[in-house]
Image (tube, rainbow, N blue to C red; front, side, top):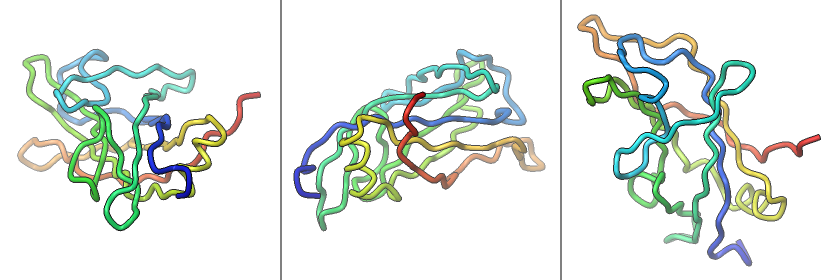
Length: 152
């Protein structure tokens, strides 16, 4: 944590999925949600996945644990998370997925800061589910974060 009391790092979420079961929106109705509930579109990848790269500030919180700050960091300091969200054309959310940030420790923050490479997670979501009443099942999706490999 020494020298990392306040840093800015990039994160990259790669969504490899098919979207919600019940959804009538299009590509402009899916994205990384900021605190103003605006959806930021990602970059389509050759393999069909969508990539979202964005900065977050990180500082030492109570107990010395990292606390992430910025327009995409939701929730209380010790339980920050990201939202991937889908809206229907009428504006209501069809589904939101929560990606926790609490598994990112100072070791990963330091590696990202020193290398200049983002922390990356890949969310595989090929079998979306819905309730019998027709509600999409969102909720928390635990992901593994790692430092991006260098580009060749």
